[in-house]
Each structure stands twice: as C-alpha cells, then as structure tokens.
Amino acid sequence: MARKFFVGGNWKCNGTGEEVTKLVTTLNDGKVTSPDAVEVVVSPPFVFLPLVKSSLRSDFHVAAQNCWVKKGGAYTGEISAEMLVNLDIPWVILGHSERRALLGESNEFVGDKVAYAVSKGLKVIACVGETLEQRESGATTEVVSAQTKAIADRISDWTNVVVAYEPVWAIGTGKVATPAQAQELVHYLSSPNVGCRNVSPITFPAELCSIFLFFFFFNKKSSF
Image (cartoon, rainbow, N blue to C red; front, side):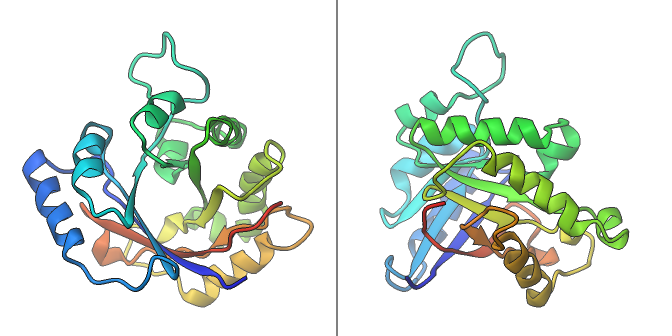
C-alpha cells in the first residue's frame, strides 16, 4: 500500500480567539492535493478545540495536544480521552518532548496513555525523539527504541497510531535534522527487533517554531 503523506501543526500554548480564527481562515483557503494522498491534522490548545472543529474545512482534522491516562475523575486540570470523544475530536498528540522533559512523563506513562486513548477510539500521534546530549553521546537508537517499545508493549494494533520521530535537538536551536537523519531512525524503528510498523519521519524547521509549528511525516497504515 502506498504511503500517505501526513501534515500536522501543533499550535502549543499559543493564540487568542481572534488569532485562531484568522489561522483557520488561512487553512481553509489553502490548496492541497486529494485527501486520499495527504492527511492534514491541526492541534490547537484545548480551549479552542470546539472553535476550530466547527470552523475548519471538513477534509482537515483536529487533534488535542494531550489527554489523561485513564477515565476522568479527581485529576484537576486534566482532559480525559472520553471528553475528546464526546467533542468528536479524532486525534490526540501524546508523548511530546516538552511533556516528557517539563512534566516528567516517563516512557511507561506515555505508553499507558497511548494504550488508553486507542482503547477509547482516538487516533494517536505518538512522539519519540532524542535530545542533543543523547544524540552526541551516540544514544539515539537506544533512547528512541525504549520510547517506542514502551508503546509496543501495550498495544497490538498500530492502525490508529502514528509514531512521529521528533528530533528534540532540532527544535528552536538553529540546528536542522536532515531527511537522511530522520530516515535512518525510521528504518531502525521499522526493523523487526523494535516492533513498530507505523513510523513517520519528522523534521522541525527552526524558523517555524512559533504559533504554527509544522511537523511533516509519512504515515503508513498497517497492523502490528
């Protein structure tokens, strides 16, 4: 099966209602090829999900930037997978490097979150990637393999999971991950010893690390 081009935009913790509306208008006016060839997903802050969902063109999709690891309850500030399903939000980003670094989300915790989100019918963009220190020490494959294995240990069907390789060292540093570097990790993660069959190369142009940070990657739909 031919690989489908997947384009995503993570808006992070940015924007006002007015700015989001302008951005959606720009997206709606954009020209893209057939939805059969490319899938577009945008991820605004949670408070703007209904606004974007209701105004974004129908061939583009919306993702939340995170969700909780289990059913809702006494977890102040968290968003459950069930809430996203109720809002008809099809996608969620999990394991982003900022949450791993700033909030201490472990590989196992991210794996649990991915498994729970998938079990509730969400599609997941699961982020993996190494820091500059880890790359320079030669630990790239070890780090990314452990991140991916924590997910593989918890799910058996990768149909609704896109693994996004996110070179953390190339975000806002002026350094740029080359296509060859991304593909090297893709080939490694696709190998039988790692256990992932739905891997996506991802690069972050430094100049786009602002309100509309794009990540570009391929998505190959398949079962584990």
